[in-house]
Length: 295
Image (cartoon, rainbow, N blue to C red):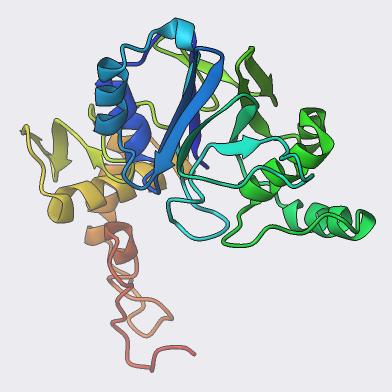
């Protein structure tokens, strides 16, 4: 559900930005303060590399209140306009500031981490209770509607969403929501992107598969630096998850798999058969009996 990095104490290194992006692949964005303005840029082109180069080129420091966001799309399309941040504030004609990919403002911008399930209900209520307010055109998401509501009702409205939100204005950072954490001296809306050591001695490297350094195949331990995803990683992930769910250690679970393969049912006409436990290997359960497969 996205991640927000609040970098007013420490500018994250490229490796940390890459880790955050790997598990939040639907676009990025950032904002910072300078010369009494908030400057921002966002879009599918905003990668970890892009942010790192921008920070170096513009010589940003922690004094610039840098905020970085990487998105996982849950509502709305995965496009430039629905990346974060979203401008907050009003135009002179009473309309909310328009959503733009980049810009500068004397008002503020908003970043959101979470899934605001009530966004459509709030949008309808605001539109019907205020006849002069129009629902904005274009692609929308829960976060863009949240920014639209906060523009009309003020940022204190964000307290009622129970979501993790940061508002950046020229005066500084205002943060909402509970459950913030710190990774490498950077305040984060979550730490789900952080590499985690698994039971096989490896790390959750790409957000999907474990890449063990040492892994089991039968009774042998094989040491390797590179692991073939299809033949090993998926098998090890299945072992890890099944063992965890069943309260077994990895070693006990692997032994159980071997014993399951050697298991033989004395009743060949029974409902299940010799290979009834093959599903522990992640294979389709096999039938070895005379009657037809049950419906």
